[in-house]
Length: 86
Ligand code: HEM
Image (cartoon, rainbow, N blue to C red; front, side, top):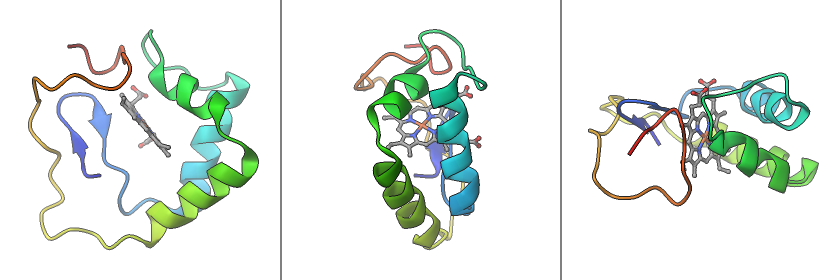
């Protein structure tokens, strides 16, 4: 959850309201990432309750001692993300 190079940002240390807000902007179409926009695909599948739950949970996780993102990996993502080309 500290992200992965080059394009997946870390999610630890973010406020729940920021995370939920970003999910809302993807759902409403005001935030776009490079196509294919995997975060939009994820956000539109989540209910308001899901977003509250995941945002609250993420914001409660401790910050790791080493906050650096993981190295780029050859492992395939579960869905294609234009911001993280493979
Ligand atoms: C419920 C699960 C997930 C949540 C709550 C979530 C949340 C977020 C949030 C809040 C951001 C924006 C961070 C910021 O503005 O600093 C983000 C960005 C991103 N996430 Fe997710 N994420 C989820 C799953 C995934 C998965 C499974 C992938 C990969 C397959 C992914 C790939 C990305 C990428 C590539 C970005 C950067 C998009 C851009 O270029 O703007 N996320 N995610």
